[in-house]
Length: 293
Image 1 (tube, rainbow, N blue to C red):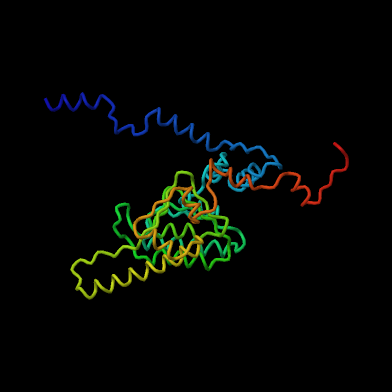
Image 2 (cartoon, one colour):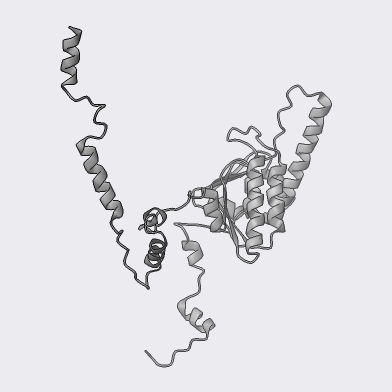
């Protein structure tokens, strides 16, 4: 029985005896013929810098030019940058979080970098922040975070444009008012609010430490009142009076209080209204009309 089985199995070819079937050999021969064939060169157009680069790379390494250069010139060749970097390229600093140490570090570094790049071009600061507190009023950062950004703004040589989008509360409202005179803007439905600094949670601190923190909060309040009075044009007594309780302002009320200068209705209509007419541009450029045409 074993002999008949062995003889019958030997009469049929096994798969191991033919490791390269006919289909595999045919495919290999096709691949070999394609590899030996000459790769077509791309057309050369001296007026097209992309095709010229493509032709030079293909001439140097005809086997790998397809992997080195892509026909699509808009295809990214490196990972895209993050959003703050893209905004920084347009000289825009966006404050969209509460003023915690990480946010302060980034904002101050961006302001210093933009001044180093060009001390004459303006810097645009867009603000949507609740300051050093959260929406429910709980303190998330020390008041010095807002003062650090403020001091950095005051040290810059550049003109600073501030724009409130969403909310500018507490220390963020101070940053909004600290922009260059005439360059402080607010979106129509944005909100601004000034309030007294909050005492951080004391926890299980001794009574003497709680008293020290309370004195520090009063000092920060007096500093905030002084700076807001300076940039809004109001007296310190008036600012301190409205800061007894949270003082909310819409765009119109913020302009009346002196926090901003203009409201951005539908983008830039208010700013574009201040642009000189074409006749004034021609006159300043020295262009004169020769005839009636």
